Image (cartoon, rainbow, N blue to C red; front, side):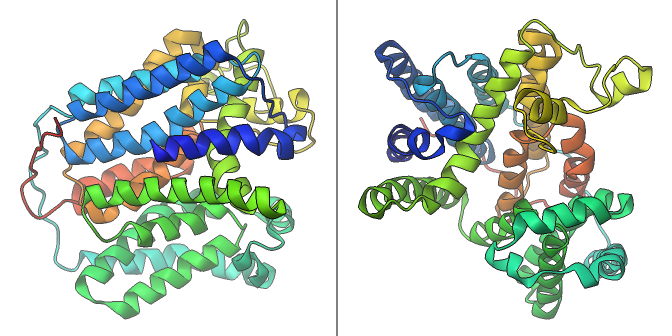
Amino acid sequence: MIAIFGLNIAYALVIPNEFGYMGYTFKLDEIKLVFGSILLISFYFLSFFIKDKFIFVTWNVLFIYLFASTVIHYQYTNNAKITQIFSVGLLLLILIPISRINIIFPEIKTKKNIERIMMLVCIFLFIPFLVLYYNHINIKNLFLIDVYETRYIFREISHPLTAYIQAPLARVLLPVLIVKSLENKKYGRMILSLMMIIYIYLTGALKSVFFGLVLLLALYKGNYQFKILAVLKGVSFFSIIGVILHKINGAVLLIDLPIRRIFFTPANLSNVFNKYYENNFTYFSHSPLGRLLGTYDSDISPSRFIGEQVIGSEGLSANVGVFTEGYISAGYFGLIIYAFIVALIFLFLKMTKIDSKYFGIVVVYIYYLNTSFLSTLLLTHGLFVFLIISYYLLRHNEEGVLISYT
C-alpha cells in the first residue's frame, strides 16, 4: 500500500509537470480515481489466495510493476485506454489457480564439472565482444554518462553475431555462474564473470544489462518474502523520497530513472499503440510467422513505426511489451492469448522448482515483459535459454513446499 501511494504521488505531483513534453498528462477524474483504487485494493487481497512461494512473489512483482503502474497511469491520463489493465489483470487472475498446481518436473542429474564447462562456453562467447569493440569502450558509461552517445555508436557498428549472443550470455549464463560461484566460494570465477558482464554493458550501454546485474546481487540473499519486501521498499523509497526532494530543490533524478522510465513509460507508450491500432489490428502479421508468410506489409517494425511515424521522433524505437503486442495483434482476443502464454511461462518456472537465489533474473525478465514483443523476448533477450537453463541447473536442492498465505 505504501508503494502504491508512492507511485500515485510521484505521478500526480511530479511526472506530468516535469515530463509533459513527453506526452504525460494529468486530469483528476473522481470516477476513475475511485475505480482505480477499488481495483488495486481488490487485487491486493486476491494475493492472499496464492499457495506457492515462487508464484506469490512473482505475482506481487507483476502487481506493483505492471498492474499498479498501469492503473495509476489510467487514473490520471485523459482518454487512456483500459486494455493493458485488462490483460495484466487477467494474468494475475490466472496465476492464482496456477499456484495450486502441485506438479514438479522430475529431477535431472547434471555433470559435476558443469560449471567449468559453462565458464569455458562463456569465455568462448565473450571473445567476439573483446575483439570487435575493445577500442570503442567508454568508461564514463559506468556512471551513466554519455550513454546515448555510446548507443548511437554501437547502433552503427554492432555485429549480428554479438547482437544475438549478448542476452543469453549477459542475462542468463554469466548471472547463473555468478550465483553458483558465490555458493561454492569460487570468487575468482565470480569476479571474472562480473567483469565480463560489465564489459558487455559497455559495448552498447544498455542499462538493462547493468541493472540486471544489480538486481541479481541485491536479491541473491534471503527467502522469497525478504525479496518481495526488498522490491516494495525500493519502490516506496524512490517514489516518496523522490517527491520530497523534488519539492525541496526541484531534483527529478529519483523520479525520472527508477520511477518514470521503469513504471510509467511503458504504460504511456502502450496507450499510444492501443489508440493507433484500435481498428487496425496486425493479426500477428508483424511476428516472425507473419514475416515468414509474407503478410507483413511494412519495412519497419511496429515499434519503429510508432516511434518515427506516430510519435514523430527520427530513429526512435518505441518498445512495448507482450501485452501491448497482444492487443495490436487481435484486440482483446490477442490479450487473452498472450496472458495465457505468459502464465504458462511462470508455470514452467514453478514446475522447475527454481532456487530463490536466481530470482533477480526472473525480475529482469518480468521487466522485459513490458518492453519487448514475445518473439524478441524469447530469442533476442534470451528467455528461451533461461527456461532451458532453469530446467537443468537452477533447481532448489530440497523438495518444494507449498504454503498458504490465507
